[in-house]
Length: 130
Length: 501
Image (cartoon, rainbow over all chains, first blue to last red; front, side):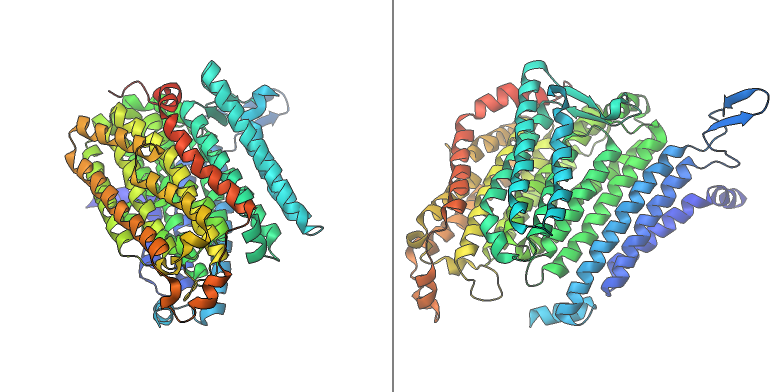
């Protein structure tokens, strides 16, 4: 039991990522309101961003840049000391993608609302069937 | 100049897309010529790349001069050169054919439409040419987002079904991204060739297994593999016809190309087929996909919805061909990818032309019954449609027959007779589907409907601008059938990695 708690606490960011992923998927599958589904989709994408950030993160890590000191000139930070910047940079792109997806989804939701006067999926399907 | 084709093929349409949008504020008439010019340059680059690959073998292009494991490299081998030519040809032909229907349907939105069109093609070309797994995700999202927007521009409930497509597509792309994340976690690399060289030592790792599951599930969702196909028919039926004759032939095919790339070149056959024992499960699933796709197509009354379900079945053909895992079946899958892009373009272009001329009776969807009398009024369009249909059925001189033949003999070699049975069943169903259309179009008089009198009077042959590309595609189906042997011996044979028996 103690071990289990320890594993959960020591890798808590990964557990949060899984929980967020499940919340996102749940919202997309179960919620009837289109905007709630869009929010679920965004939570899912955020979960993946958290996963990538966790891959690169390190406790007490520094930046991967040249360090300047007055007397010895400059020297490189050792690889073990700095945070891996690559997954973080990848996520800049993923954030842009998720914002764009959100934009397109909300634009279509507005179009649906203008057409049917509601965002509830059941009501819309009932209207289509008529 | 010569060595920059892999960059030009994607940068020209990318920049042109923004230029088109800017110029649409000044003069809308310039949008179309710029789009044609950009895609023509891509098309010529694709042809040149195929020529270079045939002559000297695979071409590698380093973006910004950075060497592969660190920088993004664009990699053109036999497989991607072939698919590049297919993508560029389909996009260019459809662009020329759809000009009139675009200017009629989106008179005030010509600029945005062509911008999205060219960006969509950019995304597809990029997915085919890139050698970097994360870059592939970004280009996948470029193609998907523009695809959602194009589908959402349609009439009726296009927005609702486009939104539904966004949900499914985003989950698919996110799963792929997660899979790549797990691969990066264990290999520290994003370059496909580099990952493939690191993986053999760690095949037993659970991380690799999870990465495989996420990637494949995501791709299955994106390519509408049977249990995950729900988004496709609704989205495709309501989309504008100019956009759908681009999206339908290319999206699923390029996703299948990505699956072939991931399964054969990233995870390599020794992992996908030997270390994991999932191949025969996927072959069974493909057989189910083919049968269900065909059966669902049989139950449709709307022309486009029927064609959409045929795509679901065709996806099963190609996925099954890959997972059968022998030389013949993979040759069949790649050949069918090329053929199916042409066949789908042919039937959807014909459907778009029919939509252009026939006013649909109810709900805005073109029903099969609306086609009554179409053979006498629009003989050339229907001739092209029937040629596409015969190719989908798999009648010998047409290209569809040869890829089906390779798939069938691959199924026999692998001993998967259920796949063989599914293929034959689906061919029979296709016969029923298309001969029903011939029956309605040729024999039925359109006078059984109240408003049919003035409807049939308005119906006549489509303008030459739409007809010539359509007939060109239909003739291409025959030509590809005659040159199948050349395509297989000169290109596809080299596209199959060495580990396959």
